[in-house]
Length: 222
Image (tube, rainbow, N blue to C red; front, side):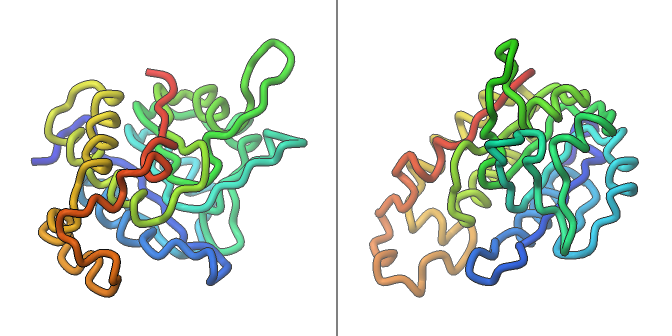
């Protein structure tokens, strides 16, 4: 059952320009999250940034499933690759966006990296969305593989949509689930998981137990 607090959401995804670094599960993530939240999903297309900015104003949840890049020399130039030939920088969000989102999720590589400037304020995508009005921002601090990211996000929103409790608790529970879930359980959950991989034939194996798969994600704000 969908809840009013998570609807209407805005979910944007892009697999990326380069084939070797393409996010294979970006489309599945957008469709799954949009379905769970009862929101609007846009994936793998040309995104009009004016439309995006206006649509984001009233959206309680904003979710981006795409590549993110941190610029160490100019943190506000850090950006999300939201569509073909289209980027959204921290500077744009900071200067032109005004939102009321309870949560902004940046399901992207390097989205959580920031630089401390004078006054000890970390500048980057996190601070930009918080300054724009978001109550909480969920980010990744280092590159995480596409599949475990998709699984974690799906579980996170399933917990949030049902329980309607603290987002930090949902994130912790989703991380613990990903750490402990077995190949057999994943096959029951998403069908053909791991059938093509020789290392995934042990149904009791926990393929995402290592912290690199789940520990990157942190919630700021709230």
